Amino acid sequence: MTITSKQPNTGTTIFTVMSKLAADCNALNLSQGFPNFDCSPKLTDLVHHYLKKGMNQYAPMTGIQPLREIIAQKVSDLYGVNYHPEREVTVTTGATEALYAAISAVVHQGDEVILLEPNYDSYAPAIVLNGGTPVYVTLTPENEYRIDWQVVKSKITERTKLIILNTPHNPTGTVLTENDLNQLADIVRDTNILLIGDEVYEHIIFDGRQHWSLLRNETLRERSFICGSFGKTFHITGWKVGYCLAPKELSDELRKVHQWLTFSTMTPVQYALADFLKEPDHYLSIPAFYQAKRDKFLACIKDSRFSYTHAHGSFFQCVNYQQITEENDYDLAIRLTHEIGVASIPVSVFYHQKNDYKILRFCFAKDDETLEKAGERLSKL
Image 1: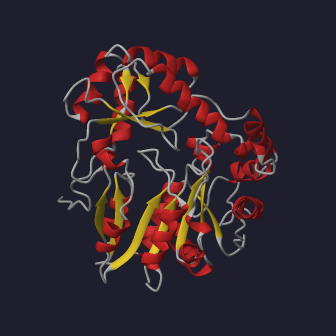
Image 2 (image 1 turned 180 degrees about the vertical axis):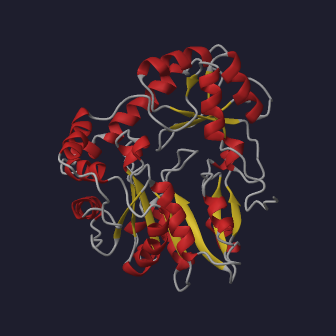
């Protein structure tokens, strides 16, 4: 039997590779983006409550009503923007599913999708699987990964269907500004170009900055899928619960895909999250919590030979290692996992041509003991 692969150049993701290597080497895993501490006991108690209450059958395809309503209320409270909980809020099995469903809903054969790289690795495969073509705008550390909107504009053709934005950004830890939104709005106004906002790190933003969601600009909001995640916010990445906000016309198309992907998301967890979100401090306290983690990690490597700019958001810190070695970043990430027992992600994997700027990404969503041990080992290099 002969099988023609639809993704002949796709292997195992770097996150799986590095996490497995970390486990095999008994290394500190600062590679894959998940916390090594548990969520709030109140949240797990709520899940247990709804499990025992018998909320164990299919949820509605779009998500249970109480969760959709509290998501809409949260967005209204934070940003002054109203989404209809019945028609414009969809609960998904993680943000990755929301992203895939949004791409699948609108990308047709021959369409082009603009990606700002380095970018999360699920975007391009979803585009290609739906017959689209990724068109890359390359951001570099020399320019602090700032977006040159004239370059973005130059990439637009009559085939451009979609632009994907990610803020706070994985892997670089940068964030969009109000000026970024205004420039993007000037580009897409009077066009049929759609947008996806990958905003899973919405609440993980530092130093008093605001989260400039695409939904805060009316021109962008009317053409945007906004993808969010409870996994990052509440330290529950293994629960895989996300959501998508979009105008009714876009939500209708997203739901047509969503119903064939997962149909619905785990019922008792949805009820638990709906209750947990009733106390805003559960998410309003998150920026300070993770800023302390970032600052802890940077304090632990302050005597190292790494150079860096403080991450503005997400739970990732990128560091430059040029004062230590000229090795390829992938080779160095593998070597450090083996030799000093600290696993990271080489940032070149987030570029389609594997651009090597001598940058490693470390996840600081770890307990203080792990950060201290990692910092001690990294400082000896």
